[in-house]
Figure 1 (cartoon, rainbow, N blue to C red):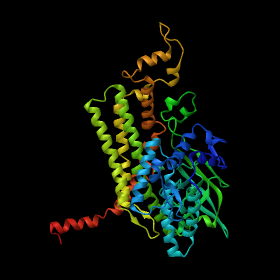
Figure 2 (cartoon, protein in one colour):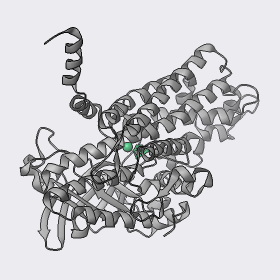
Figure 3 (spheres, helix red, strand yellow):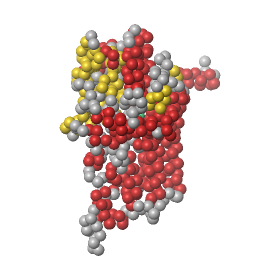
Figure 4 (tube, rainbow, N blue to C red):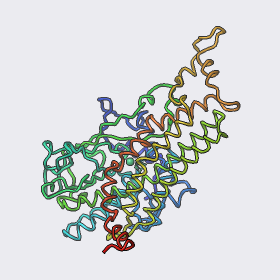
Length: 491
Ligand code: SF4
Ligand code: FE
């Protein structure tokens, strides 16, 4: 089957009976909802760019399973070059949307579940790998968006899944039938949930024998019976509901999306089960998925960073200070930080290796170092962007004021004319362009897009401490002690 166009992707969402709630009510036409649509446009961009001859080599690839041309977002990486191309593709998408384009969580889940199911079958004689391959061929051939769902609510963090007073704090099996399982629970802050055709659920922590019923991985359609989503709020999100606020929104075209995904007794047929009680493999899926997604941040956040740097440079230009050496130096620093993240994304890809199942995995230590840097550098980049932009990005009157005919001046000037006069940019630059770049920076630094560029940089793909645990595990301090001993002459 052919790759979907962006329009076909949007139309395909309309065919689903996905249950979405927001502000305490069910949203019937969520595809056209002004708060949701920008996030759909973002995913649609992963389809649009795959149709563009200019980006064909980056966005499309031959399937290792069928030989068909597929979107790279559904691909199993076959080489370190594939891993690097993935990062480059994500940077491109970041540059085109300045948002989280959501489709990577599925790609990262495919690669983690593909390699782990192979190893589960090898040990237990199960049939998960074949199940998964069939599912993935269906996804590739239909060019579907799949949400990789990992983060459980977790309840009391000091207790394991089986010790929680409410067993639903982690997704778990409540009934085993000859033809499948019934699952309950939820996944939190789930990126791109509503915009996906299917979900691929995975456990969120390593588990012990007592947690067997929680060691479960499976796929299900987004509109499965018993499944629904409660939409997550973002800073300044209701600006998208205001009339005539395209400037105030900052990025009216694109945005990210998170939701609480609830599984209320959802039936999963056997063919869509990829882990069911083999608890010792829960940790492997988590580690691999997290590794891939930490690599991803060395691409997507860099692309968004490119747009932030560009906007800061424009703000300086519109204010007439672009030649000041202090401004130039700040732009250099922002670029240096951003490219350092890209280096990390490429490095963990270049150092990748083949898994037993045959797909390629990133270097886990370097992927964790990549993400650890992402928990810091975008904060410094937005700090410098705010520094360059000046306070106007948060103090400017609304677009309605700029458009207003209400007379306020002694000489009959309107509110719009007064705003125009006092917020004028340098000569040759329209006030509206200055407004736009300021509002865009506001959106990136502390508005809705800051979800994707700031807090997601901190907590997405695991909070900083999760990377530090992996760095401790992978850092080989013993080996390093040995280097020191040998040179220092210590027996
Ligand atoms: Fe993709 Fe980045 Fe969004 Fe994750 S945070 S889904 S890697 S764009
Ligand atoms: Fe993310």
